[in-house]
Length: 514
Image (tube, rainbow, N blue to C red; front, top):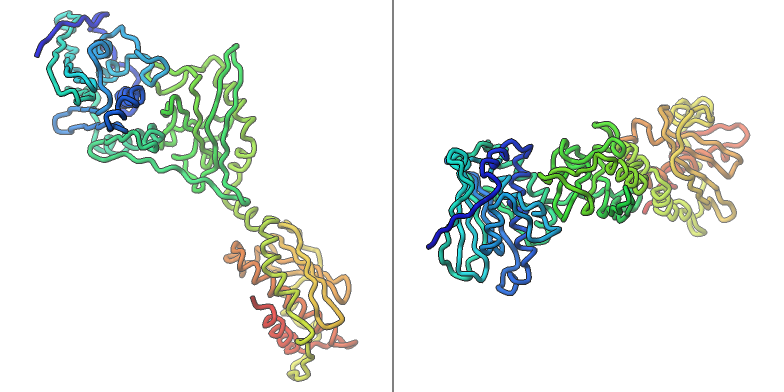
């Protein structure tokens, strides 16, 4: 074992200033995870050559001793990189990596606590390096140097361990186990999904479950994006996707903005996801409940803490303007309420076509040459004119007095009623506040235009089911046909015996079965 003095210029007292940085706990921890994952990705081929195909980052907070430990089994650091990790004026060795400022370890560790240490060994090296930084002691002694201790280890040893003591930012148990863990798994969702990165927080492996997209009008509402724009003579590229949540939620909706495959802005919290007013409107809007997405902004400048973008010079507005142009249909769909989406889906022309296909064979094929309609001569003595029958007036209206909203396209059925005649019936849906269930207009003796009020209180609980709409369609066809043929058979006196309608209805329904 040996030791040497390392000057960590500028003055070590500046480490105390880092405690006043505007970090959030999860972003501070993310600085260490960034270093660990970047160490793995930058040296992936070398690690795979030794049979190592993933990295595990263990994060542990001891509530009893108030100590935070972050340990990984990534590639580790050689002497030069270790010195660079500790010095205050160092630059990153890999440009374009997650640890792009070369200050993450120092700033985050000094933000968390007054004393921290780092230990690391590089795969293939027999040397391990260790140092401890005591900020109060360095300030008191006006020292700008620390001791670097080197010891011999097995060459297969690799990875880095950071231990932070005397924490000034204490984690309460609920935040540590829930909020921070949830935000970290959201932040590194792509790493976790790749299988190359495992993050264990206080003994629990983090897993992120992707959000399901809405399926509406026969398609899944997810759109891949890849567009560029120029701002201040610089080209910026945006990639990723937007979608509509299958199950809306203010915590899941919103945009997650990525840089180098790590979330910079976003998370499973309503106040963290990016919801600019230009796209999402008011805070409690339908859009802010359902529109979500992941966007890669690798060309955009990020701040020191990597928890936001530096774009107050107009870059953000330019970005939002271009984004809005690329997703107008998604904003439009997200604005619709759940009820309106259901209505459009259930009473769309596509759904109307499904009902038509299900009903057409039964309705149009119910009669044939071997099963011609027979007249029913046995009638009950209770007869009444159609005009006197209040039950008809209750359920059927032959006028257009009701102002209602039409739904989907009408469906036309040609129904054979005997060997020589067919009855043409056109059926459509509408939504009305009226208590009238169906209304019909009869251009002649062999045709009817029928409208079904799907908002009728009796049928309303079932009407969103396609199979039920098909049953209702066939029943209405049989019902109207029974009435119209009973009227025609009544002769000039227009006397209709109720049992005639009942018998015809029974007969028609029996022939319209699936």
